[in-house]
Amino acid sequence: MRLLITTPDTIVADLSDIAAVRAEDESGEFGIRPRHAEFVTALVPSVLGWRRADGGESYCAVRGGLLTVTGGQAVSVATREAVPGDDLAALEALVRERMSAKAAEAASAHGRAEQLRLEAIRQIVGYLRPRARLGDRG
Image 1 (cartoon, rainbow, N blue to C red):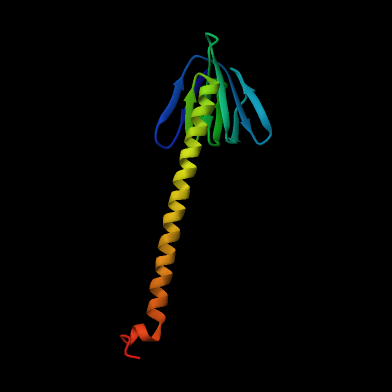
Image 2: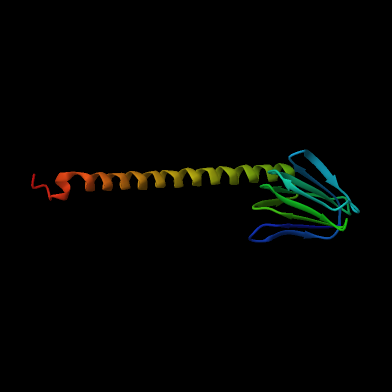
C-alpha cells in the first residue's frame, strides 16, 4: 500500500511498502490495511502510525488534516503541519518542544500587538485634546 503525507510546504512521506496505517478522527482511532474501502475523514491533531512490509514502524504527528483512501491501495494525508519520526518518545519530545516554541512566539507577537495598540490610543488621545490641536495656545 502507498502512504503519502503532505503539508502545504512539502512532501513529508511518500512510501510504497506499507502494510497498515493507524490514524485518529473525531470518532476515535482506526486502522487501514490493503484493500480498504474508499474512505475520507477529517483527522484530529494526533499521531499517525504505520507498519512497513518489513515489520518496522514509523510515526508522524499531524495537526489535523484530511485522510483519503483511494482504490484500497493508496492512503493520502494532507495536513497543515507534520512531524515525522521513527521513535515515539523522541517524537513526543520534539512535538512538545515545537509547541512550546510556538507558544512563546505567539505570546511575543501578542505583546508587540498590544504595544502598537496602546501607542495608537495615545496618538488618538493626543490628537483629540483641544490644546494639542491648537498648539498649546490655551
